[in-house]
Image 1 (cartoon, one colour):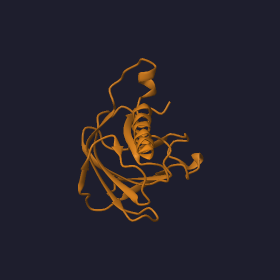
Image 2 (cartoon, helix red, strand yellow):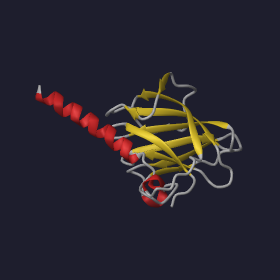
Image 3 (cartoon, rainbow, N blue to C red):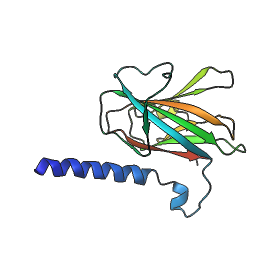
Length: 171
């Protein structure tokens, strides 16, 4: 019966870390600003592990809610986000929290209709990340006040317990 307590303790600890990691530094400083974007829908699906894909799948079947708490898997996780950017006065960034995932690839369509990719994660040198920081930040060059489909493929050696946050700056 003792190992069961260890498993549940690890699950509770992971969920607490996800929640704590999702707290914005601005909120910790007491400054509350409106989020520059919204996540309207989330879908997830596991696929066999291997190199990250060049293009996202056509659709995913499993509706999910945030935070995502799926534990560890040797498979790659696809996450489809339906998002709306609410600001057009400055760049918007999407943060994947917590920042201890092995590799995450963001897929979004550019103005030319072609897929654009951004890689981030523990195996990506900080100098090659979209933002030169340890946080998993992705640039969101999307038109404001319109819904967009954003795809992430995640491969990780740590548990897949995560959520997302929008930021108007990366200070």
